[in-house]
Image (cartoon, rainbow, N blue to C red; front, side, top):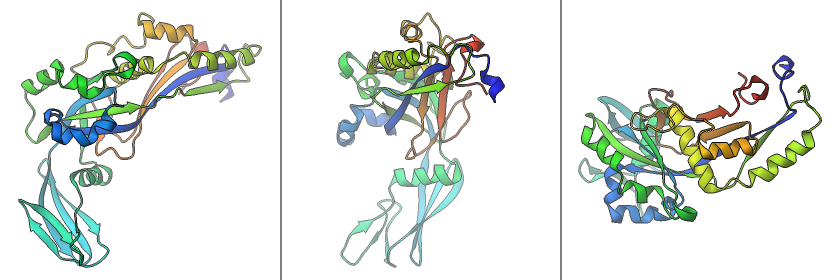
Length: 303
């Protein structure tokens, strides 16, 4: 391990870390349904990143009661999955395929797993629900005045994807992400570096410059990182040019002397697993980039 770090230039290097802290997801057609959107507007106003993709349709095809378990039967791309839901008491199953199934206790209270709960279990337990990333974008505006929904309602790419046609069994889906608004710095300290005399100065510089990076800048960096990572077919910018010193915002990062950038999506409650032709299907995604081609500055992603 020591051999990896002994030829590095500096004993202190910094990485700017950005991550999604919350999300809103819905079928694409719902963005035009004001009544359905209304309860989500408070969450959506914090979402400046959006992903457009395909998810498989999940159909509830039946429900049965087995003692104190409610069993819901779901179909995804021609395959059936049964999910068990333990109940507090053995209460009767009611409803039908049109109105929906539910259980009703002695007080008359009705309950049943909702669509998001079922989809999340299908994803977590069976890896049955994926989100194929087709496009990544952002909306910020002045001082965060625009959010992802504002952009999506007039989005030509969304229309283009829809016009090209949605494969049978799939739904065009939107995922909006809220990025942590505070700056996060990861510092690497290397006692085997060639230069070990600037440590204190470089720590101070990293902290000072970190807080010069604002939310609008981080939103753009996060968007560019995801585009390079997922290589979505409907994006053009950043797919092959990021990271590049030709990008003004990245030039600022070089000026601030960050060594690396990290953009993370790791949210336990996502009801699907993201993937693309370039990125494997999994629960957590980490887009990470060294900003310096020089081997002497690569300390974060040496593996």
